[in-house]
Length: 371
Image 1 (cartoon, rainbow, N blue to C red):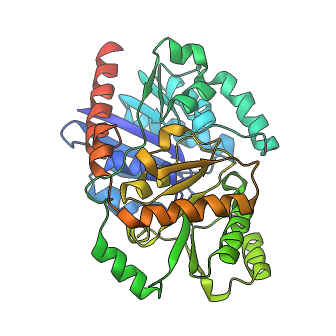
Image 2: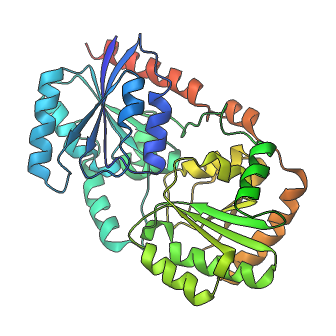
């Protein structure tokens, strides 16, 4: 049995947590014993679920208090003598992997789940500095797509076949299209006879949330029976709400805050909007398409995230009105034949069970090869 440490720093609602939990839920307890290591200022730590899965959650000081963070992590590594240390903190991986290295952990895996954007100058500058050290202190490399792999580890590392690609997995048994759930949710929220445009995201600069509101406002003007829904939390909430008030959405906007029960909304929405400035590989995009939902993404997002005809890419250079015209037209087309895409997901490497089995094999081979 492999003793595994999984480090994700901030365990917040969002794609990173979703990816890791998809793996944890499908680990074979006879093959993997795991600890999930998270920062104390996380906003969505799944204590009970991880306990039910046979794992442990170990809480450490936040990475902003870097010395306490690393000292505490070092004690955990020394006390538990892990076989594998798996870090999914993108360019921040250097810090936990340094601790894993000096603690003598043989298999040290660095995973990239993101890229960067010129629109986030300070954050991108820090990422670009840190990614220069991405090949240090680890001996295995993972990424959720080619673009995120090349961004963090370099094209040569990818070209040499050193980066293992594990697409963001989802539970294909739970994320298909469910007409009964769709009707129930729409009835509860008074969305009957409406065309519902929604998003689920962390409301930070990366997600371009103010432009999202501009797009929704343009759709509102063009389509009288349109309805809008926003799910998530983040530092830009107040700015978004001010813009919503300015555009006078009234009862045509449903603000749902943070939710964990999001399957019903993938089914209830008629379109999903994600005009991000950048993404590694958006989990919400795959989950929504699994339910047959058309997704409208900015053209800077990897095209690996598109499923058949459901993924639509629009340039960030286009206006909100241009976005609205494309979204309305394509959404009306897709509503005529709504169906799930589970079979496609399984065939193309998005299924959580299949990807988790690949990941367990990957861990076991790494342990054997590094003895």
